[in-house]
Length: 156
Ligand SMILES: [Ca+2]
Image (cartoon, rainbow, N blue to C red; front, top):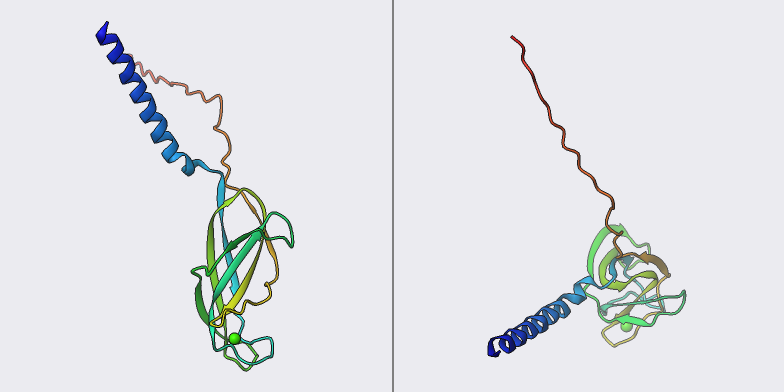
């Protein structure tokens, strides 16, 4: 009788552990995808003077055009001098990119803003949309495997 009770509680403990482990890894199976954003940094301020106090970029996205309910502040963008004159009298075009991860599935609309050391945030960039698809297809079905037996008969 005692053994049975112990067995039951052990089973309960194992069940609890399996549930716990399962929940721990649950976020790995959340349906989400990544989006690679690429843009050119502004070389001028709104008064046409050259940007000398650039501080960073914010990324915004949302589920409908013109509406961005998610803000990614001061994203760690990678920026490179393209060597191409921006034509503004303020140096070269600086191309930047950032990979936004874990974006929920569905159509998403993105914009980027630049901000300076004084905390001034620019107007948004042009908007770009992307269909985030982190959903895998279901497994293939009705797999069959045939065994081919090769028999060689040698008659002397
Ligand atoms: Ca400024």
